[in-house]
Image (cartoon, rainbow, N blue to C red; front, side, top):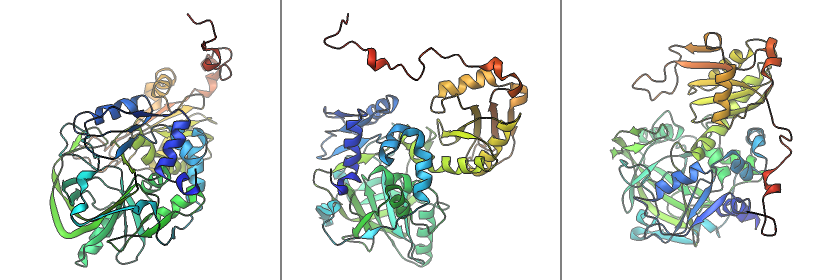
Length: 454
């Protein structure tokens, strides 16, 4: 694999395939009635997938490329347990992107005018009552019209014709702030939407650094080398040289049109509402390009959104002096599990308060001992069931503010659960484990063709 391919979507696909974490679906699948259900099955099995034939599109479709912590580790070149530390090191040492001249893989094929048709993409109907097919893994690149600083973020798009799409981008999201600046100046906003990038790009795009910090420099830090960019073909924006597809266009000043409903990450529908309009001026892509999609609320979505927020929680908790062994947002980005080695009675509550303070959207925080697997909901709730005194270890904080899109008041209160072992009775909570735990591997005992299988 060349260095250029290493930091491409297809490079990550090959790495997952080599690790036995990816399957290829060769039977044709309908993007309106079949693909999303198959995506849910891949998610359940924690497998990435490449759909070779999607409807009448000539492009393959990739899904769930960061569907588990070990897949994130493969993208970053570390073990799954080391992901948060690797992310913190990378974004703490940013590497600015570089602009190169021509020859970009993302511009091997250039479609402009009537040829720039969004209908060519194998976009998917994700939920049964969605307004239509949605582009969900598009990373929108633009520049602040006042400062010139670059921004990149995920924004859903619903095609409403060959060269137009509704796009969700509202303040306080940074892209929404940038568009509002352009609108106050009476200007359309040029954008480029990269679809099909190496997962390090997604981890950077999903982070929430201060406005003006270049997420692509953060991505360069994760890779320890710069992201390569080339000039767009129809807009004054540099675009990633590695992308499978780039959709170029303009977000029109003062234009709002109905978009939705859309099944969001809470597993409910956001209603039809007025959103911005993107008018497409060009689509460029690789030869034999692979389109990428993501499903809101999937494990992949949680991984992409969760890693940077887990780092914020780790840093806040460590400042209390706690001995943190792991932090995980699960099963959604509204809940956290923090594993510690407690030093004093009640430390679990102090740790949870630090976590809630570090991340506003956090609705609850469960604090467990280091012997609990933070990736396993079964293990976490086993700890709650067997190590929590409900009258002492569960605290509800009313009117504490939380996830802001909360018309029903479901997220105004916040919850602390201390599921750590009482230090003065630790000997009574020694967890039973089988002899050979962590050493004996099932694979070493499976019957082979030359064995004595039944």
